[in-house]
Length: 162
Image 1 (cartoon, rainbow, N blue to C red):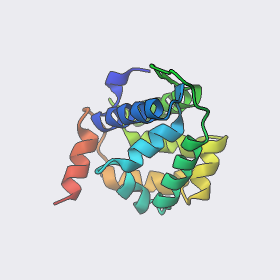
Image 2: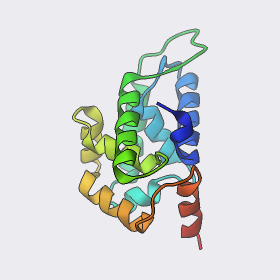
Image 3: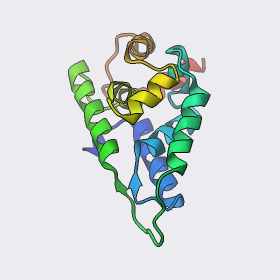
Image 4: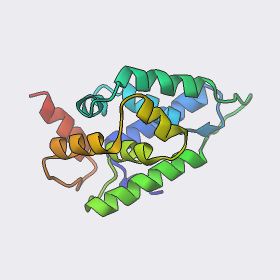
């Protein structure tokens, strides 16, 4: 996993996820931390998820519940990236390669979550998120453009404001 190959927005979400894990006395950064961090970003993927027909507040609530159920570790000064998070990021990276993107955008993490056969795929489905609708939203928002620099995601979000 190469952090420098993630968009700035995705890197910010991972940084926030690390803070959530540390603040919650969790040993690992789990997908719930990443999802909560993304959904709390002012210009994160919320509008994309809404466009895909997902229940964004339900997703956030479910991810917060999952995060709060994680075991606590006393005296934890460092957190590591959890196995499930690594798997989802690697799946997102594969998706980026398939699409010809130079950088991995946060929406690809969400697509990987939709494909997940475990709890994360279920959580997505329960909140109205599926690969087909999210892919359609991603295609519409990207307008055929590739993610060719670290700021691509942030620039797209900025353009939506005008």
